[in-house]
Image 1 (cartoon, protein in one colour):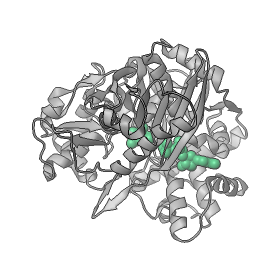
Image 2 (cartoon, protein in one colour):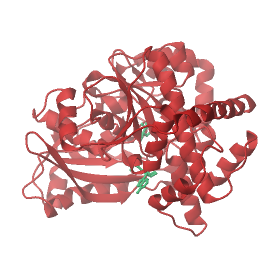
Image 3 (cartoon, helix red, strand yellow):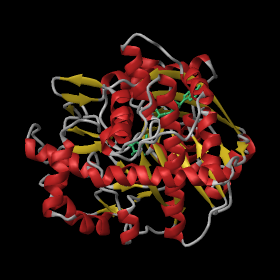
Length: 492
Ligand code: ADP
Ligand code: LRH
């Protein structure tokens, strides 16, 4: 089975080999996913990404014989494109970090208060949620959206151009802020209130559903046979959560890549005032589960420092950056990785320094100090979020599972154990692609339940473990961190 995983910073095609009991994965194609600024807007390069998708399918032949049993695509959340009745893509999809959304959010929240919206959708109001993007779109009237046009989220859009089937997969739709989290379907009344035609929205299909086959013209172009296309848990975070290697319910997870998505898996959403105030979101998971989690601006802060330093002429690898931070003294300065000041691209080192100055802290000067500041702050944010999750659940959690590319930052894994005082269980690194493949296996009837899938992941990809160290020092420092982030929210 081929899993195509488009992350916000890079994409990959993974070949999953399933022997009936264990899974192995092989990376057969990797590519960068660089957004493009065009005029004053920020976009995804959809055509280039589709080209990379085809290259990944073609690469299969160099690694295996015959054809894959199926293909499925997952991507980051919230973004979408429009496809008209003739199958043409209207415009190039916007990047969720585009600046147009902030004003749209403020305007919509003026007529649809935050508390009401949260009670209806269970989604933390972030400016880039699809609901605000569509509202911005409707106001700007840049596209003509007739009755035959459909809005498709990014993985659905890729799937449409692979198979010709226009449908909406549940987990990706759940990132939009347009679903009723209990009914697990569109909130039709809400759709009416954002001034876009209701005909834009297709039926919702559950993850693990076969949705057509590879278009004949693509099969001919790539000289492959006609391959089934599956709607997997197509929000990358949902696929990552599928492959948490545990059968216990007593852990919090962090899906750690560009973003850090920290939360728990539940049967029903939590929609109370504390969950809203603390910024928790209730997204949909495989098997109708709810992913109650927080969107934390994760390793994006390091990605943007790295990019800025490259522009200034110094190229550092992530491995080098981690080593530099390890040598630095810790617990000296903090930022709040949830603060919207860090959302847009550009000049990240300056923004981190400004944040520290603004909150009366010592300002990190060197690159190593800046990296250490980010890693310490993330570990502290994970501790803060864990405390909030435990209050919402009314129980203590035994461990933290971290999955995704971020586990290669071993310093972050260790500091997370130190900050939370809980063991960190790290892996698999390709959790999203593995979850994607296992939901395809489910569509083929090879596995039935989430428990069976997680047993397979546990048997196939043994994780690493980090024990907490220096707990007293971290507990004390946590109070300083909390004072810092409170100071910032009071001042801004
Ligand atoms: P996404 O899917 O959101 O694009 P990934 O899951 O691929 O993100 O994770 C990317 C992040 O992993 C990078 O931002 C970087 O911080 C971290 N990372 C990748 N490789 C390494 C490495 N060798 N050492 C430390 N961190 C790494
Ligand atoms: C992570 C992610 C996250 C959010 C963001 C926009 O890649 O999917 O869960 O939805 O991107």
